[in-house]
Length: 178
Image 1 (tube, rainbow, N blue to C red):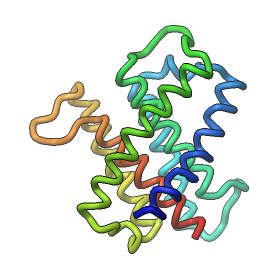
Image 2: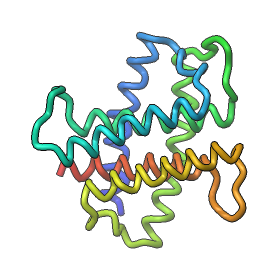
Image 3: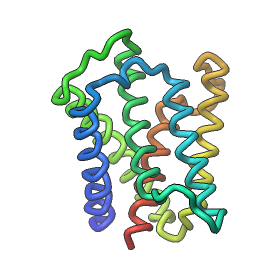
Image 4: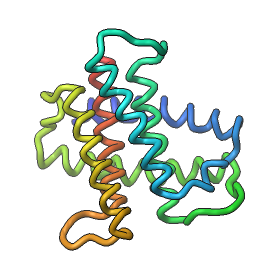
């Protein structure tokens, strides 16, 4: 599992670097996004990945990697929004947003390590297309929970689904690099 931890960190560092660069370009404009808007952004990226996996012809010169990175970063933003709430104007500096980013990733990585222990790193035998489908399934679940005003009867909440999507996307990035 030591390799997984290092591979996870390498994938996240790529995502984190892009997040920081985009914060420098745009500030924290994403702080005005409500959760359903973030969910829809993630959905668009996951649908594009699925299209790339199914279609032989590509009309935009961006592959799956950039889309999985986008999924991870939008999920982290969503986790931050769950805790901090939506604002009317951007309110976080790059430094503040990066601290929050790192906190959410640390919690999500620990979840991955706990599940990896219990599941015996089963994800290593999965296809990237299956990870994509699982992300899409989680998105449909999140949309349903959002439609239910955030209420669930026996299921995990929205935050757990975002965390799972981060972990699936990291696994996909690891697979695509190998």
